[in-house]
Length: 388
Image 1 (cartoon, rainbow, N blue to C red):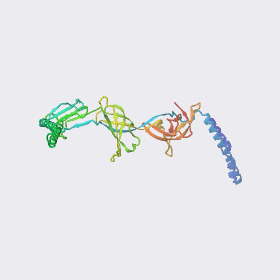
Image 2 (cartoon, rainbow, N blue to C red; image 1 turned 30 degrees about the vertical axis):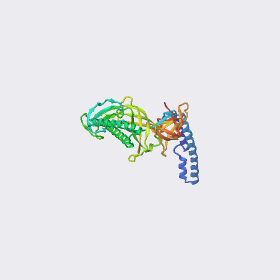
Image 3 (cartoon, helix red, strand yellow; image 1 turned 60 degrees about the horizontal axis):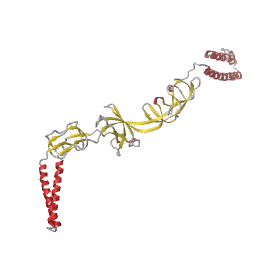
Image 4 (cartoon, helix red, strand yellow; image 1 turned 120 degrees about the horizontal axis):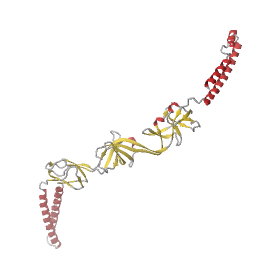
């Protein structure tokens, strides 16, 4: 079809110009008649305009009749909405508030160690005993003196109530009784410090000092006591996320060393910005039913800082940039019987990115179809063919 049309065009041009040798023009040029030359030029220009119009019509006919014309092939996707959640990706450390080193409150020889490493203990359970250095004998003497002072006071009180004896004697007996009682209580308190007890229920992770060694009050490390029931992750977050993270924010916790994932919530948001790294701290409660979590383990955190219940997401690779540095996509009109359609360029306002997808704030509507593959080779208002 193309060959026939272009043959007709060539023939028409040759005829209009005098059969190719164009003797009439040559003859006019030899005569050097200016008026005739101008007249011939005007005649040829009118023929040229007519030929241009005919060429346009012929091109339109070719476009309609030539089934082999080059129409870009594209694929499309439908615009839908979904719940979109954005997460801050950072690293934290697993911690517990019940992870302590137990120190003695009394100096002396560690006469008994009553627990072993890995042993579970209850709150208040005796872990070790320190030699009291004779405090128990002193306490027995003070208790005997306190009992005598109480007996003396009781007798003096009865006499005083019968108006026998002086008030001074009564007051002296009372003072002596109270003084002896306080001394006995103070010594009891000191003696209680020779018994080392668990401050909470947990596991003896390490027995640091062996039986028979001399320990110093507040200096010698005796045991490490750990409770793995109440674990949490602590992390530092850049201050620009301060308005997006709050108590009860959802957090996905990954423990790389265990290959396990947990779901937790932010239980505490720090009220202080660290001037060294411009960050604030958060704590995330996580369950530990199988007791696999340990203090100082590394955790990867995905903290939900933004949620859009009707978010529009499209693949990042189909978003283009025009000459004005605007982010664009191509919306496809309804297809015809040949599965062909026209594309319209639309400007996009982008939101958060999640993996290979980007949130679209404006520019697209649910239900529209947009070009996916093949967008590099098309332009605004161009005709395309949709393929599956």
